[in-house]
Image (cartoon, rainbow over all chains, first blue to last red):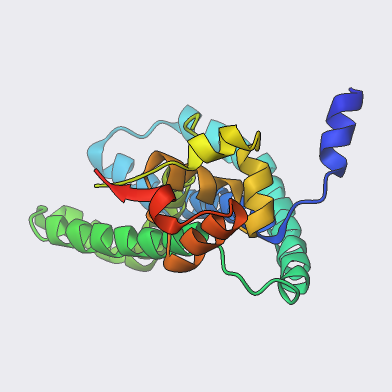
Length: 160
Length: 64
């Protein structure tokens, strides 16, 4: 217990704070993306005849605590960002790995969306009509999910 | 392929990845990914690490 309290009180360096901030941001991106993709996914399962009323009720109940958690994360990340910006004024050395992760995740997201768009062209007419109906949500959702997931993957802990 | 001796230098100076990262001004993740070869550092980081250990960059980084 004492050990845990001591660890929490340790002041993180700017680079370390940025790393943790990016990791939390990536997790938030995945959650936001899932919210955007929920409706298109429900429509798609409906199209395939796989939807069930019980499942949608359960998902509806799960959504409420998730929305509260996402709101809390958004506010805390916003406060953390302001804190990092204040600290950054004293430190001019950019953490290269963080920059590399941001650049790579953007590239992965862009290429993934291009590949998905290419695959969508070969879907049957009814499926493409369904995609066109939810197009903005699908693109934004995919952007958030792929960007967040790729960042989480690149920032993974692998017992180095 | 670019290899490095950072782990050996750290062990010699009895330093953790976190302590080296704090001294250089980067995150621990940067040091760990450079050590494992997952990430190639810029000249600035390479020179900063070399300066911290009071050695030449060639002693830290080499081609296999």
